[in-house]
Image (cartoon, rainbow, N blue to C red; front, top):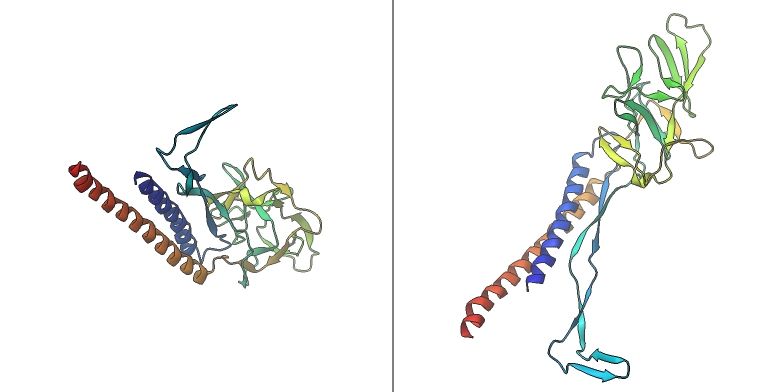
Length: 271
């Protein structure tokens, strides 16, 4: 009976972790380029149950063996196995702002932070007071040759991520290639770590960031932003499933508690 308490409790803990992930997804449904988290649980190894105090053992030339028959299997509950990020692409919305950019396909913008290089798909950029292209948090966006200085410049970004600039004071001047946006990928992007503020960090499992080249390089769209990939209806349905599963585990614990109380108050007293 005590085992059933822990089995039910493990189920409640697993559903709580799942509910936390769903709640976070719903809270970020309007966050630019947010990628939903998915909670994955795994079961503990099952045990074989044998009937106790049966016929004991039987002898054979190589020793002895238990003749207690197997009754069946018993599960020992579940635990959180992994909380991974679903990088399915979100939809796009036009903004008309030339500092806004989105990526079509896999890949991440590279960003310079005080903690090292970080990566994001949130292309809601701005030009800072010092003239550099920055994220909303004030981190410089990186090109392949470093920071992008765009003060007093008319600039356009083509599909390949090349930044072409033209001085505001000379509209007749030819556009000059300033740099190309540093777009990175990972060997196992599923295992990169969220850092908050739409930033990601590489991990030993994901491998280091490498520049994205070739035909698979994502298309850069200037004047567009990628929306969250959270589907509100699906998340709400999953939340209902979590609540039902949580209640089922809770009732299991209550039933086992009632049985244990009856055991101690009646059976043990009788003996």
